[in-house]
Length: 486
Image (cartoon, rainbow, N blue to C red; front, side):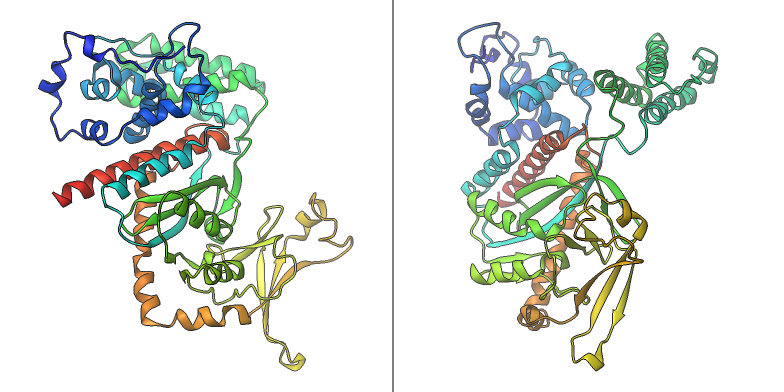
């Protein structure tokens, strides 16, 4: 059962907040800027309204998640800090003497209350609504890009992953007290995950038995990570990696295992739309969806700016049909003219190679002039034949017994001629210079809000993380722009 009532006004200590939290405190400013009642309205159907024990307000639970993102904290650490940080308690609508929640409640809140809510679109829509009301967004331009996030659980076997996390704890402990080496149990020689789990539990118990060491921030941080990992593996001993994460390619020679967040941002650096996908997805396929989501959030759009990934034929035709200016430079090797199986082979602009629908990237490419054939030149992309022979999608793609597998693309196409002319104009070049803004925004998400590594496993968890991180950066940006207007 939930109530939309606060206990703040009943506390005799409420005046403390006015004494210790200055007016320019960021959390106070966020509380004054945002009416979080929309969270209650969206989530109230997830609770029983007239029966059972009183539940913690969904607004307060959401604010815990927001604090996690703003300050890049774990579940355990955000709850711990809310015990003594008056600005946290004020932001959480708690009385100074109120008890905090159990950290496990945050996991339950994410899993039970936020399913099927569409939190990402809802939170972005709310911030855009605020920005429009405050007349912060005045441009009709969006800049689009994708940023990658590494999976929390990499492609190591469960035993290897547990060993790595327990090792991190031991190393942190040894930097404080080397004599602790004698107190840790001998490492397990078994290949059983259960044995490794038991070893990790022993490490946790021993460290926690030394409160003077366990309380040191460098140790505590590693210890909390180990505890969360042990809990996750205890629930499911069978997974060795994030079940939804996929391998994506940053360059021809480097890859990552995780997710992508496809982002649209106004010229004022307010994120207007986002879509979270698995890591192997092509950036260009999400442009049209980002435009539509931005418009649904209230943005008027006349110009779309992006890198080469967004200059494929369908995007050029879409922007032309909807009278939008597309500032996206053509890749010198790619024109997406009349080519076979466009839906099965996608171009990865970072690596400069094609990727098949199984997620395998071409290993080399070859330029063919074809002068004597009276045809446009083309580039052939060759794939690893060993992977093709065992690929689950080989039927209709790879012919048994073939010595090579290639995919060809013509260099010149009529669909791109107008775009090619436009990209040589001064207007295009000036607009393209503003693309750096979204790269800076991606960096802010990663380095200030922990968006470089997923905080949990699964696509749903990544969407929750994306929703709270983007909400945080948008609100902070709105506050900054409002201060500049004063």
